[in-house]
Length: 422
Image (cartoon, rainbow, N blue to C red; front, side):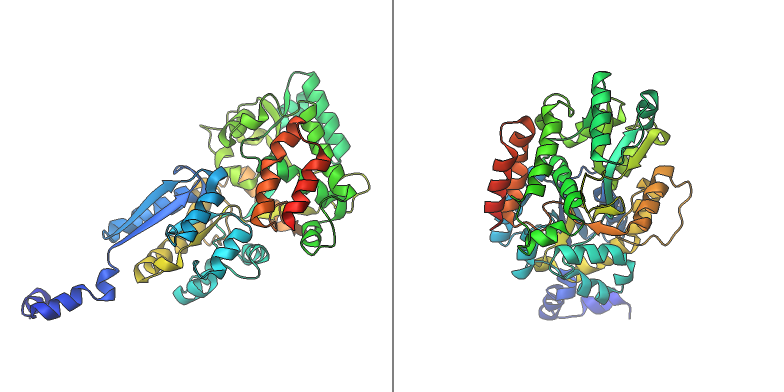
């Protein structure tokens, strides 16, 4: 007796019970993916490409992409979390908000789920370690990136103007002034995104106090109003005061900042290695892959930090809603994340928090260089806001815009930040 014949002979009651069984219900699934990245870039592109292949095999599963405004992402997740209506998969800020969502039982325990699915060994241990530092020892978000941050620079502009890679803050400022005098914008930055500016304050503080500076702030051993932080905020504010970021920095969005650098209109760009996908794309990168160099944040006078200390992170992490953690979602996760690291590296040259087990051909030189920098990093440290609570996180970002334009003093910026951190 074939299967259709046997099904036809079942009573309507039995047939209905089969149709309503968990296995049947899970055969149809809509996975909503909320991300600020466009569908053509970064981990979002890789996930959607892998999902497209999966849904061809499982037509009952649909993956819907929703674009998020990164500047409003935290508030959006707060509303969705309060309504117990989180998307299936969503980019999440690497701060205590994500920890709080997990403490309410709203997020998937990635470690437990990946071990259950037999794909935990796909994760890079260094990326797992960084994420656990961020999230109170738990793996509650996917490390879809493994980034190192620093200054990318235009080699030709440096050579033409006799500028060498700055090793100290004074050398960096001297180089910026030289470019400005030649009519070349020293730095490209997105003030609209805000974090590219606070990153500079955080790096300066790490050079001043050492790579564990923000952990010491979190423990109450340092205050954000201490002299070293005032020096850091003042140094970064001075860059804005001298016009080194160009006109209207606070209106410059992320892509415009990248394009300004990739079109040869600015000498330097502080950014993470997630930009490799852009740099490795000749349609975007007009100055050429071989014309881009990279150096670590310079040391500062009298500081404890060294050039062996690197700002590293796993980027804008991605969390998964526990409410939707069923068999259909887990089957999709196993398929997509078994292949994520290899596909992201092979097709975009992205270094992720997943292992690369298949050696790709024609790896771009920039990607190889960044991989070597990551492998040689001695003391990775977290970014400025990583351990802030939601209020301090917002204050640090919102107030950096008036700081950089001179409409707020460094002392007031840090006073408000310290108050928000309590």
